[in-house]
Image 1: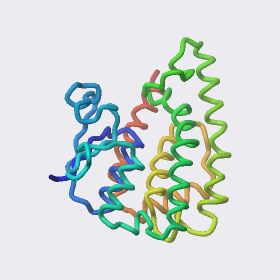
Image 2: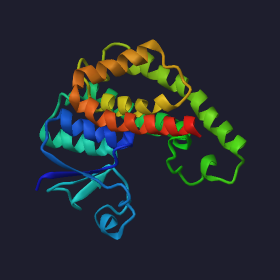
Image 3: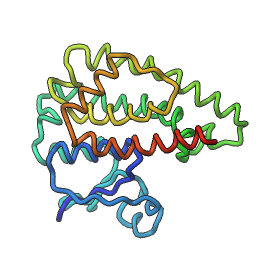
Length: 231
């Protein structure tokens, strides 16, 4: 069974796994499931209705989801220690960075960008409430303003002694972080020089494996920005 990747092209969550399978050189089949994730057919395979998800032989339920979990599984299965270090000390940096990205950085990025991207917000968020437009923008801006301090943690800790997280070549943590940072293009933030250099370093090292999926995200952002300007 060929690895099947169910994905949504504009999503940075999905982008991370799309970059990974290309960087890893894995044979895969990619399916755009835009508008299908709520269907009975999709949920029969992926009850969460989430993407990215993979379908692969050997998985206990035939499928799995969550970007970092997918990358960790595939890298471990294929012995890709260049992308997911076997050395526990290096792996600790990768795992810590990934969970920090998912639990701390990404929620702020989502709150700061989803309203401008016309993405559905999460239940309970100000953006999905009956708050005024001013209140929603105030909440969005608060999330945006909190991001620089979070980013500085990567500079001071995860990237202080090496060009990439966990070593001298990109890991799954770099793929996940750089993909996440793509959404910041739609915010009002001015990225610090070190971060711009880091993103360029990740892309130049990974080449087309990064640039191709990034093109879909950037194209969507350009469209969203154009619509915002037009309105």
